[in-house]
Length: 301
Length: 286
Image (tube, rainbow over all chains, first blue to last red; front, side, top):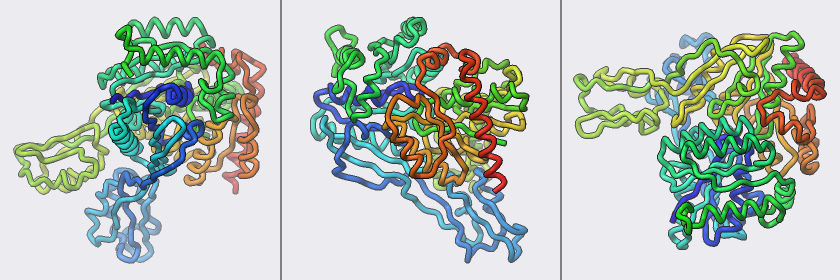
């Protein structure tokens, strides 16, 4: 069983559309949506949820106003500017302390050092995880609560569940839709994975972000291939991206032309390959390149 | 006045909008700073082409144990919620990438054996792009804690009458850190199912933060009217719509500002700037 993670660095290059098509083309796979911050894959794969569970990725502190004597210790030691006070803040009767739940990073230091034990500290539910069935097989997805932290932990959990299902049902592939950027959720989605496909586009921003995301996958030592989406929007830059990819030893898995059918497919809750058109043909070629073991360049799916 | 440009979905045109707004404001003679808070993938510099005049390291504190003083009591490992420090055998191990720099281990150590030392996690760069003051944060490769770099770049951004913040995509901690303290958030979306879904998440987020906001629809003619209906039923103002113009996509691909490559759009950004300014001031008065 292998994990293929689709990421992009830059947002909006077409990761999710690509993953939806791969799900349609792959014979036996589990799909995992690791973009827990702004998940969209469910809009195409229309999963039927068969199991849901709450996710607790951290803890949070809350001041019990009845016990607080307004000594100010918590505000003094909080590194996240999460504690504020009204009134004089010197322990006087008119002082009141409170914790901003959005700024609180859940370190628990305030609760530990409060001399009055006036701070309650415990786990909070900040997301939900779903196991579903789709027309192309099982899918694991999640929703991080609004303004919540620990997206990395939720991404790890999504991957763990997806792998367990793959093992149980003897499926060879876990196909993961990643998130944009190079930070916490992206690191969680690629750590220990077998292959990464970076979807880029022929823009200076796309190229800039591809370099950073390729540095990241090299940092973690993960086999990385790239594909250029909407390659004909700027053919000159496409060639430049191909040349730079080659220099870095990144294999080009394919190029997909700019095609309005991609948006049309999305409007109909279809994968591009279900909808048809020029881009659909390109995505099929791309998938063949990715899975073809014949030339020794494929990932052997 | 602080305006943030954000979106749930990536690639909807945040940077295009933020850089063009900054450029148009400067042309109108306003004092303006552009702040790139998308520290994982900062792209504003590609379009504004600033001259960077100052560059400094952004650091986070990590604990270091003085083994001569340490009694191996293990309290540091117990207080740490992030598994970033642990007493293993006869040593104290620190895992820098996991550390949130809460300082709990140093405070709890009965032997005073822990000091905190700075560790570089990113860069902070400031400069000028013509009349636009420029600041950006750049997260180091392999680092997870982008909010810390965002906080640093916001703190270091040159003051101006108008500060335009280019936020990262999404709805979690890096975005929250970027838009915290802003007077108005401009949410950029596109009229597609993905755009609408992620707009709804972004709206929930700005409502949770209680920051006033409006919507910009980019590539307004590519999809359907579902984003319009949603905004209408939620009483959200659509401030401007930008058509799907291949010339915009091409100019963008070359790293050009739209208000310069396609001057006919300069007026639209001017109007948008006026709308946003007005919205932000009206709300401030209420």
